[in-house]
Length: 399
Ligand SMILES: *Cc1c(COP(=O)(O)O)cnc(C)c1O
Image (cartoon, rainbow, N blue to C red; front, side):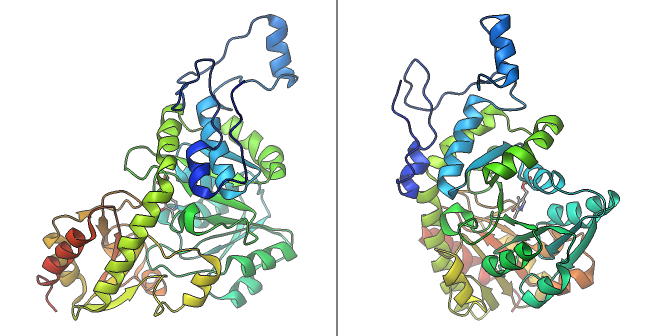
């Protein structure tokens, strides 16, 4: 037996390096990649025992896999969750976390500032199965209160939101949800597990796209759902195992290696983001900077209450609308144009013409996504090179 690596007293950075590790008989230092679909049994009796649940070994990798289990256990330790299941993408995590617990006649309340595909799942897919939905301005507690009713089963939100980095009060919404026995799901991608712990704030379920900061180096898609044993085992697991949104062991292995540097990367990316937010706020070509770690963020107090750090994301509005924003983007050399985020490389996107182009004008307005808005995912480059790049691009804007 090797030493067990499930010490819950470790601090986050240590959990991210050692948490959940299970070594084979070879005692490998780095986590093993078990690229296998199935498992063999010593005897017919052993197979029977495995299927009876008398022996908790592995049966088939759609259900569970040793490499994927290390990733799940490490995420549980980090979030203080009892259980987790990893999924092939963030959207598989979101869809499974919602669909496993609702039936026709149930009701879902969601904040309207959501990642585009999450909005589609709630507003377009769920109603096809007879599920009622209400979409609210997530920042307004009175709207949540009015929308939540006796048949509400799920409340869903992300905070900070994409792309305008608004905050939603997780504790207050969880209290409203629990009054009717609904579960609150938090999409914690923008906050990262380093800066926000939704379960501690009263949420019931956390979903991640591990494609973002958890991989952190732009390689593999992945996701994870975290909650208590009761939800994962009794509500989620059968849906998961029969519908098959499972994470590939190879991608899980990549995520495990990503987790080892998550704390370091998120802290440094946040330091860079803070400096960029302060720099941009002083430039005459910039109308407005939105950054949860700055005291001019409209919800700065809430940010300090529920987040342990700012964010790796900065949103800002360039004067001169779309033409100016495009000139700015095209003049960037170090910062790349991409709709992805959480990468070691700094990435910028113009939400109105990319990630949020499918929204009707009215919805974009409601979300404060105007034509001058840019969303920057700050990477790990030297801060001086990033500022040089921004400074060069600013001289090219029309304002
Ligand atoms: C990327 C993202 C998702 C979807 O994740 P995929 O891994 O691309 O499926 C969901 N929510 C948020 C906030 C995201 O940024």
